[in-house]
Length: 111
Length: 113
Image 1 (cartoon, chains in turn brown, yellow):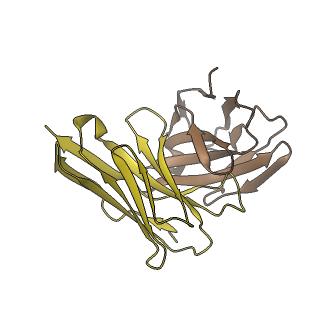
Image 2 (cartoon, chains in turn purple, yellow):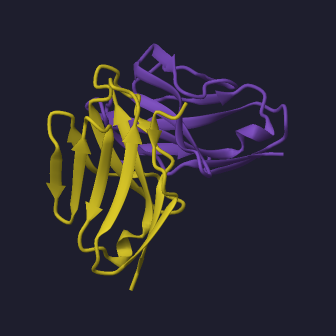
């Protein structure tokens, strides 16, 4: 039982490149979210999903895209990476509505 | 605009003493509040929560207090232990909107032996 698995753990991108951060869960939770963590800013919600086929924007959605074709997977796409997207990204699933379980994070650097 | 605020970036306490971490929120629709603990290079882990119908919830050394009129909550750790040293995040949600926890900036707690 892996819980929430994020891949890759580390990534360096050049400005303008695109990539997908993967998130997979085996807890059969309906709700999933993506956050970014930056110094002094805490965890900010990028996008979230309340079930397969349903996604919505969070606090800082610009520059990111998501889809939810299955309950298990919730990938986050960076369309054209910018240095401002250098951050640590966390995926979360929820037991019930509110109690979140987080993955180990993906540390992304955009140069 | 930050809906959940933790105004103290850091806190240092002696082992055995009480640690008090504070959190303020602005959104009146929030009705469920949680505290998460985060060690470096790991994801946050759930610590304790409180519903807006309560004003206190205890779990061992950890107690969360909620003052709805002031839109303020606090986490008390008694007694503090060196292993409690971590970053603590306060989070809030509107239970009508699942999967949408809003976090504060975090407070880094250091417990010195």
